[in-house]
Amino acid sequence: MNDKQNALEIIKFGKPDRVMTYAPCYGVSYYGADHQGYECTEHAYSHNRPVGGKWLDIWGTQWHKEYPDVMGFPKGTPLADISNLAKYTWPDPNDERLCSLIYEQAEKFCNPDEQMLSGSHRDTLWEKSYMLVGMENMMEYFYTEPEYAREILHNIMNFQLGIAMHYEKIGVEFVSLTDDMGTQSGLLLGKKIFDEFLYPEYKRIFDFYKSREILIMLHSCGHVEPLLESFIELGVNLLDPMQVTANNLENVISITQGRMAIGGGISTDLLMSGSPEEINLTVKNSINLLGSRGGYFCYPDQSMPFPMENVTIFNEAVIKYGKYPLNTTP
Image (cartoon, rainbow, N blue to C red; front, side):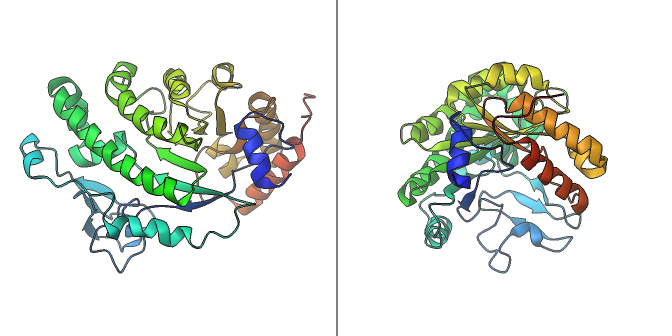
């Protein structure tokens, strides 16, 4: 089977031939998904601006480019003050300046037999809320101004659902939602807050896609073990990236096996500075633990400028140890 067929077998816990590093996708997105502003015609990607650059994205968040080769940081949050909501204008998912890019990119998709057409919901909900309100403010408002927090989240999801309708029109098979929920040792938000405020809004977009049999990948860095059951209930097909240094992989696989595919499981530090022997052994052990019955894409839990020789060793190890039936010999 080709890469697309094999990736679908992995995600659906079918009978893949091999473990893969990534699912083959052709990605499309709306203008503004990567923090562009309405005036950013000279930069296809706003974070490519020179150091010192400042701009407003389509949501009115001000970004500052402070370091070379690093994305900017949100500094100006338009809804930090509750009184600003009355005069705030939410971006319109049907604005031609935003949604036309989806159709322009989709027209260039020419390999449906080999790739999945994929749509992006970067900063889906939680991250977008703190880019609008400020992280500390949003955390406080969950307790002090809960109705304001709910209104912010609901309007953000209204926008995302509008974008989802465009993705459905072009025939996406796969979508990616991104919201980092974890730190290295725990959740950014307690599970109670997640269940009360975020879960109902996520359910709206998950229900939309699940009813149309569109596969969903959720990107959420850090320690996310307490949320695994919630992710499964929502309908996550693929969870990315599973950070080995922030989660107990044996516990993770005991919960997710046969219910939700996972990607990652390889330490960034290993790919950055590990020996060939360490890389080979870790890849073999990770595949045997996480991919024994499918449902696993093997790759580093973060993207970094890894030494090319280590990348080659890693890729060769995935090919060597990732063929089904797996070689489980210690």
